[in-house]
Length: 289
Length: 267
Image (cartoon, rainbow over all chains, first blue to last red; front, side, top):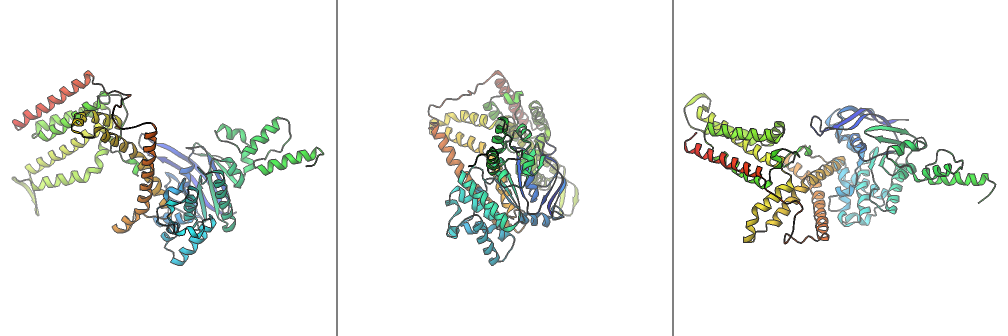
């Protein structure tokens, strides 16, 4: 697989040389592959937010290097600025960054900064709005008049409109109701399917990560504690719990059932897998549903 | 980074300076400033310098922190030094082009710089060793007599403590919004002055929106806890003067008296 972002020996220390010095992340080595859907999980303060701000050059590493498609993103000022358009970062609670008078102009802010032509900007705004399910009737409204969920979609569209090769979302579902969460996650899945871009989803909801990620990276105390396919990571449920993290609800149900003496397979982390496994057991017992 | 702003920052500690009543400290700072402006000659400056240095030493605030606080004011300090250096009359001792150096100029410049630095260090010492809450409480108590002439002292000090309380929050928020807009390609650092002013719009609009939202929420939170102004309001932490406050005030008065006497004799 093609490597899109390579991180080499990345460390970041805040307020270096003062009494408030704090090591946020330490010696991170990772390769993110093209088109991958990565779930980044970790406790509050585990360094995941610091980490993702390095990927688009917002924070400069204390030591270590980051490469986007083979080129060092801190090689020059222009390289660092250009990478912002290639690696789109949606912050936590992105609705607080909306500022324009109309929804349309807010989504167009990123593409305009890329110095694209008027027509190109227009095309991208319409496409991005469509991805997140914002109808064109809302284009001339003020973003501040809309509901929380809609505001968040507009903020996400503002980043998608730059057509980044890598889209990073920091807790995109935080503070939304279940149907709002569902909608946004579905938007992300659809977006990736249609564009083939790489997506990094930062979350502490194990269920979300289990459902949509192909690869899970677990951060603990500023280091990469686990990295692998969801079944590999979630089969180490005890270690996750020891780190103060959850496991997906289906995994803990399967674990409880196993303790009751049912012989379920190891890798269960989505509701579908749990259902199939339980049905298979029932089927094995000679009964049909 | 914005986080490095030290203005008005409080460094908790447990020294005599920290434990003094905020009212005492406020009065002492006013006395200190007055003394600095009364001081004229080398002797009185030496005394003021000794007072400043020993206060800083007693407070255990590292001199580095104090010097860092002076950094943003370097421009003003240098400007004062230059103006005094070249615009003070007297016998020239050296001359380059239109610049004349005189002993009087050098003396005047160094005294002025020393005065500004001491002025700033002294006031910083107050905010470094007194929590903002204690400071506003002290201010409210000190201004209490003004209530008689219908000055809204309580309301003013409440506003002040809220403003102080929300400075770090707003700084953090500014940092966050700035990062978010930079992630969308906003450029705050380069370009012409007009471009840069325009570039601030994506930062200021969300900042104001959230400040108003916060103010609204705070007002609701206060009202739902039955806040209705200062009338009949009691305090959990009562301010009390101790013997150390009396001693500190006596010392302050002595320093002020000494500078006045020295001023009369031109020392």
